[in-house]
Amino acid sequence: MAWPVIAAIAASAASNLAQSYFNDQAQERELEARKQAAEQLRQQGQISDAEYKAVINQINQYYANRGSLGSASDVNKYRAAIEGYNPEDYAADVGDFQYDKTKEDFLNPYYSRIIGDTANQIQHSAAGAGLGRGTGAALNIAKGTAEKSDELYRSAMQDYQDDRNFAYKEYADAIANNQRRLDALRQANEYKIGMQGNLAQDYFNTQDSQMSDVLKAQQDRLAAKQAYSTAIAGLY
Image (cartoon, rainbow, N blue to C red; front, side):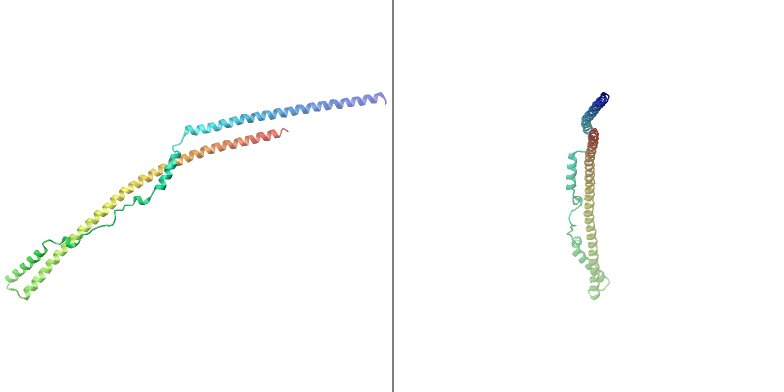
């Protein structure tokens, strides 16, 4: 083989070796660069973990300092108030109306004497008129005493009705007054239950807000971790 050909072959081989060397060096540099980038992403992820924990602490500290008007105790009180509420406790009940008098209780205690006096007066009047003790006189006496008796009974009945009406009015007034008192107690109790409900609702709202903020931070953290993982995977 001629020396020029051998020299050409040697030069080509040397060139290929040099190119391969430079290629290997470039790949190593690129691989190193990818490793460094991945390490930086991992470090940023660690920083993000620390920042996430700080955010959670800030959220918890905020709600701890903010507080809420209501508490878990108010929730229990509200539940107990609802379970213990009984509308029948606020209905007036004084029993049935009781009245044991009769119209005879109001009849003039001198009824018999009055009837007798009436009969005597009519008889004297009849005698003065010359009627004596005949049939006409007897009829007049019977009629007069009957009218007087009716008058006395009608008066007794009126007194009986007036007294019974007055007793029933006192009974009805007692019911009305008692009901007004119970209505005031019911309104006060319902107002108290409503206030306890507001405290319980405030407690739940605060708990829901805190949980919502924590979940939002967790979701953001998961999204960030996914982004770091995707970025690191893309380097290889």
